[in-house]
Image (tube, rainbow, N blue to C red; front, side):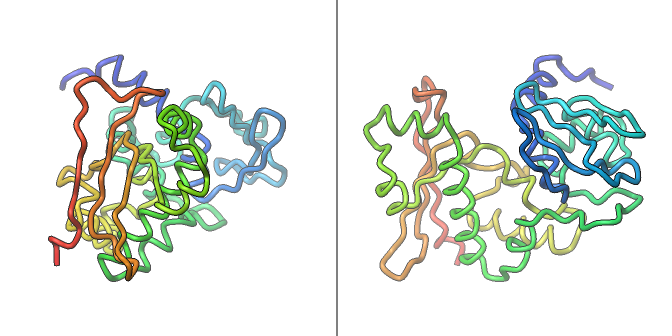
Length: 246
């Protein structure tokens, strides 16, 4: 079996936001200085002993289990899978949404997953994703810096045109593909072009610009990959036409 390249492992450890990953698995985190605290799911935790350090993208339990590590170790422990399986889950964007074999005592379904799974119509599902990208952009320093560098950083403009940013976290907000509802949602998003046939986001790492008509229907979506404040060299504008799926 081929060895996983170190650069691929480093990329996952660097780019997969641990705070989002933990929250997406149903664990409530609260800010505590530079860190976040929450109830550890690996033992009967009465007081928050799980510490997430965003700066280092690491986690550690100060309680009974004394576990810790990076995003890969989190998925291994949370899902009870091997190192290689954890890496594949992270690459596919499913890691936060696969329910562990032994359920914890509180809800483990990501909050945003419920709204995504509850939309039966493709267009409504697309609208939910556009809203998610929009909120993601407003929380992304990188995306906002890029817009400012292009003279497009006005908040009213961002809200008016629902500009968004696909920061590779959408997969963590979807139900796992091995669930019926998760497969249906992913099928919808593939039909409208948000997800590729591989399951990866079409606009991964891109500024997302939806074209919305007078009736509020998303007719097209454009994307430009960004790198810091610059457009990636050789990057081309991407476009999907959701209405083509109808």
